Amino acid sequence: METRTATLQRPRRSNRIAAALALLTIATTALLGTTASAQAATIDRTEATEVRMINQFRRSHGMRPLRIDGTLTRAAGWVALDLGRTGRFSHTDSQGRDPFDRLRAFGYPSGDTYRGENLAAGNAAPRPTYLQWLNSPPHKANWMNPRFRAIGIARVHVNGSPYQWYWATTFGSRWTNAAG
Image (cartoon, rainbow, N blue to C red; front, side):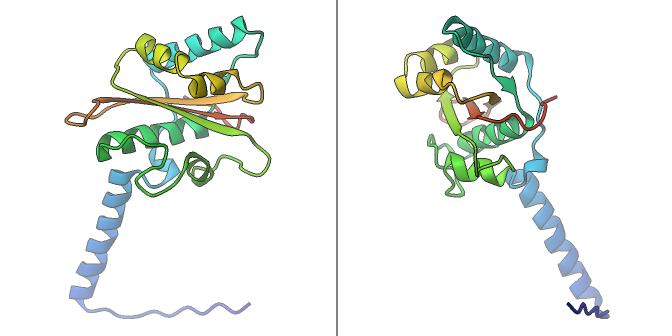
């Protein structure tokens, strides 16, 4: 395979336009969170409480607890923020991706893994969110899925959005990396 390199001299105006486009691309990426590395894979105390409650539920039904996964957490954080910023509440994000496509875009394995997602909105505290999911058969089914071994979680507050608080949990059958 042949590689060719060319060096071009550009007028100053083109350099400014190129620099402006580069900055716009960086700003758009940061604003929209379109790359997995743009989102930190850390959870706060409130999110950890939610995971503890979910794991207590699983243990009470003879199931193994879920491990917090960094890749799943980044994907959960991105979708929770997307919901708040767009004012939408859907498993299809503003880029038209369903949870499976979104998890793949964030680098979670897709070929031989099981994956799932729970969304909730309107509550800042973990207990009411836990009860929302507990009282919803499809969401509770994700908790009860014996194939799931890993979880990602995010809680996001967006001022001026319809629900203010947005939660997302993502599930997978394989743990890929630790969240901070």
